[in-house]
Image 1 (tube, rainbow, N blue to C red):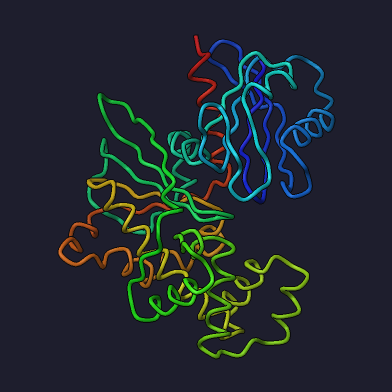
Image 2 (image 1 turned 45 degrees about the horizontal axis):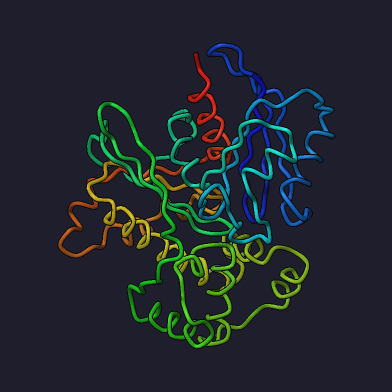
Length: 330
């Protein structure tokens, strides 16, 4: 059987073509495309098939999409694409197409990872056969839950990234009030994402009065602003960028702790998403861990949770493939 698999996000669309014979699945082709360069998922898929001269039939497809999937339809949260299972089946001549939320795919993909794909941020207690939670910031913010029952993990997705932002200190309260003057709803994703870094940067410049360097200002005009802010912050060469990233880390740690508590009890908290890997040194810092653990009466419980950073950026893609494999394995 031939499988077509995708992980569709606001920044990148990753596609994979695999062949399955019995219980053996071989990945034949794999490529990533910039989502903004295309008008629809169909365009990306056709480009992928053309790039690798794939002319044979596709037996089944699964696409992990950044957005809530309802009745086989999903509107990509940070992309003007409306995707429907039935339409893809017709357009691509595929008899079976499945759309799933991107963080459902990440949750499934966790079981496909090697130990080398994980970096321990906090060593907790024995977490074998316990529930787990997942959080990940990238173009948007995702979260999911892995429930351990009857010797199996059952993944459940959420839209926790669109819940309201809860400040943890006076500075974050000021940040929230500043954003509330601009938006009717201030979601957690508006702080924990690529655009979140930009929002925090603007806050420190416009409200806290930290000077913006001409070098950074010019770089932001021609490059991804979040990437520029991150690079200058990590290089310790720009105060505004450093303050931005420090605040981002505090918010990330607190939000990760909140996700763990919402799904409590959990033995492991996985951190996925594209941003964490790029700032891994900050993610293992005392500041992140302190913000994660600082939960009042349950602070001692938080210290028992193992935190693992997912360094494999294809975890969602491999999770979507794993869903197809489990469906068609003999």
